[in-house]
Amino acid sequence: MLRIENLTKIYPDGTVALKNVSFDVQDGEFLAVIGLSGSGKSTLLRCINRLIDPSEGRILWDDRDITAAEGQELRHIRRHIGMVFQHFNLVKRSSVMTNVLSGRLGYANPVMSLFGRFSKEDRQRALAAMARVGISEKANNRADQLSGGQQQRVGIARALMQEPTLMLADEPVASLDPVLAHSILQYLELLNREDKITVLCSLHFLDLVHRYATRVVGLKDGELVFEGKPSELTAERFKEVYGEEAEMVSVSGQMEG
Image (cartoon, rainbow, N blue to C red):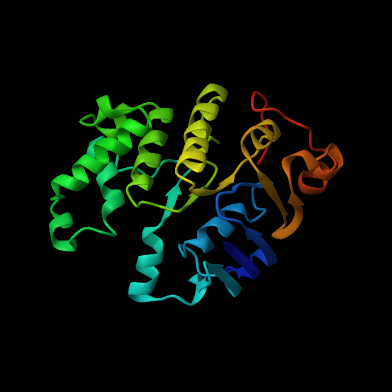
């Protein structure tokens, strides 16, 4: 179980990104994190894997305090937390295979990986990860030769190389069209259901939340303003998260922020 306790993040410029946020995530859940830009969604996800250090509070994962972990312990924890980014974060000039193998860096010999030398087992694992998301035939293509949807699938395959039990997806479909958005979320759903990987995914569109999430948390101005099942996210509760002017947009629509 993942437990967020009184999490607060204040940036050096004084911006309060998170204010005393607390909630639990059960193993195997597909949790959608919703809210406008600036609500704290990305900060929350990046605090969980310590890409950002919180100012106050604790993050406990299977009773291990992520916020207190350092050095080798933190590296070991991060091995099992996959991350999928909105803008893919690929090395554009490198091949798909190289990008996917980079997800194995937490396990590989540092000197060997520095020269791009991975074991036969890791290369086989990379091919299997690419097959899971349907991009095996692109293994030798440069990442910048791929479409946005294909690049995001590379990102998922890279995260799979970590053998994660927790997957963080930071607005993974925000830059994709509706058809590709469903395609990417279906891959995450597959990993959630078949591999029992817990997924935390920030999303904007209500129909995607209803379709894929098993539970939802809503952030507004860094504070937790909703926690419950997708079916409980009524029009009134939706407005509590997005404001009175918010519309119940579908994935085919467009929401500011």
